[in-house]
Amino acid sequence: MSSHPDHYIKLANHAKKASHLQSVASLLGWDQETYMPSGGADARAEQVSLMAGLQHEMLTDPKLGDLIGACTADTSLSQGDTREAANIREMRRDYDKRTKIPGELVSALAEATSRAQHAWKEARENSDFASFKPMLDKVLDLTREKATCLSDGKGELYDALIDDYEPGAKASEIEAIFTPLKKEISDLVLNIAENGKPPNRDVLNRPITPAKQEAFGKFVAESCGFDFSRGRLDVTTHPFCEGVGPGDTRMTTRYRESSWTDSLYGIMHEMGHGLYEQGLPLGPSHGQSGESQIGLPCGEAVSLGIHESQSRLWENAVGCSLPFWKWALPHAKQFFGEVIGDQTPETMAASVTTAEPSLIRVEADEGTYNLHIMIRFELERAILSGDLDTADLPAAWNDAYKTYLGLDVPSDKEGVLQDVHWSFGLIGYFPTYTLGNLYAAQFWAQVRSENPELDNQIASGEFAPLLQWFRKNVHTHGRRYSPAQLCEKATGKPLSNEPLVSYLKDKLYPVYGL
Ligand code: ZN
Image 1 (cartoon, rainbow, N blue to C red):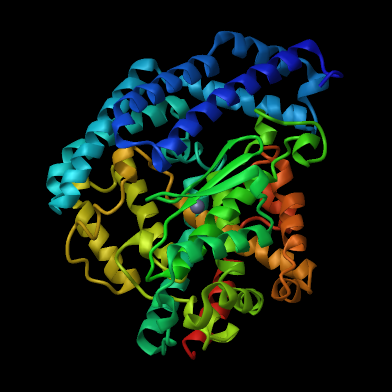
Image 2 (cartoon, protein in one colour):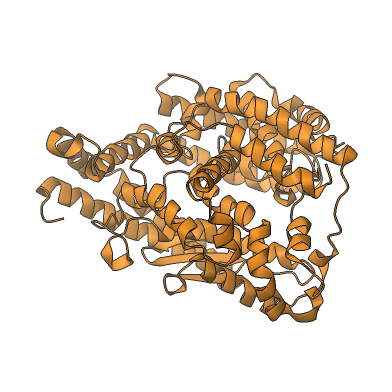
């Protein structure tokens, strides 16, 4: 950092301090989800809110604005394709966004979403959408106001919201990818439901103790490249992965005796997130090349979609494949014994490859998951713009599930009220899940075309070449490029739906004998 001018060093120091505050906040959150006794809940809520206030103060500090201004004006720093220029550009972007929303609107949103979450919980329990509607309308009003501040009245409001999760993404561009994708996947899923013969999957429900599941899950994660000297795996009700700080990436999962592959794929999913966090350019003391980017945008993950591409790739493309089971099954038999003694890599790979329509998104399989997301994207875009009245939302939801998944939705509890997102004001978040699957499929196709030995490597437990490709093409860049640029740099093409459609067809049809 010594070769940099004073204003850049000050800027980097400010960013580093802000990121340390973020680390403290996420450690509080992690502890709350894992080990905190319930008696600590009230004080913890106050601690979390204090931290959020301190962070906000630091990130909207006019002194930070001055430093960003000085660095931007210094064209020897702020121009060109360098990490420094990207850091300045991204810090400017973040600062402008944070300072655009008036404090009263932030408080009004916090209060409305807190009430809406409460109302949603009760409404879901009673399967009574009408009781949630007024709170949802209030949240939508305030969210529109927020989007208007962020967009300065330019463009579609939805774009201003999705920008928080997938910088630079536009609803119209997502629509152009999703609309044909929805038709393709729906046809595939309905064809399988009508004509496919599902394989025997009884192995998935054979009893295996949580202790054995955990030992095997850790073994798999370590073999794939997760560094346990810079990370942990713990138990929680709602699994997540959090980059708590440099050199400290925490994954969580849950175990059920009668469904051992749930925890395995839960771990592989969070491990994919964790490998990304561990591969960010944090400097030589973290085993990464170049100058440390701790606390700076180039040391951060670029978007939720790209993050999700990493988790879905390891969970599905790698974990649910025949090459993976050629390697993993002999090990699994050592950990679990005779209970899976009759299995072959072929039976395991077929057992975990599914496309069966179901009502609940979080339980959906790889084949059907994106339909749940694309339905939500269309509906939330329509209620935000006002094209769809929230009074008509449950009926629109049920219609979409009938059309695309062939399902009758028996109640709002299993329909429009199942997800917490809208009560939090999270509009524009859902599409990042499917963008993640699209990026994953496109990266996967590219890796395979560059490395014809990939299947053989995976079958012999050699995961390093795959991980290295992601280190080099995705992880090391942090936020240097936008998600769309990153995709194009890594694969030579803009994001498209073709790789995902081919991947799903190639994978699913043979399992169902089609
Ligand atoms: Zn995830």
